[in-house]
Length: 135
Image (cartoon, rainbow, N blue to C red):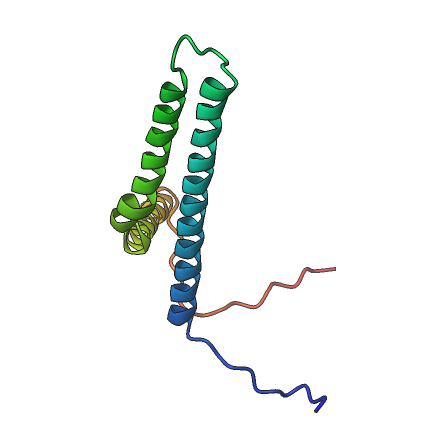
């Protein structure tokens, strides 16, 4: 009951990564839907201010506000549904691997440069004991 050796379910790292990816996508979509609802409520609010409260009634300025907001909402939707497919998890992994290979090449080049500029003395494979000082 109070044992420290409780069996905990082990999650495969790939499965864990898939779960994190799914949670991130759910969060993205949830924010987009929330943005859409706020857009609808805000649009109605802008129309009410212009038409009912007659603020700047000589000109229908609310159309420009709604149009600009709709453009931002469209950009958000493209980012969630289109861009994420092209620049999603697989793209991130490929970019990460490419950058790691590039960094490994740089390190190898630096090591070769260091070896060329300061060669190590030839070793015979025998380790000599330290010399004793005469008193």
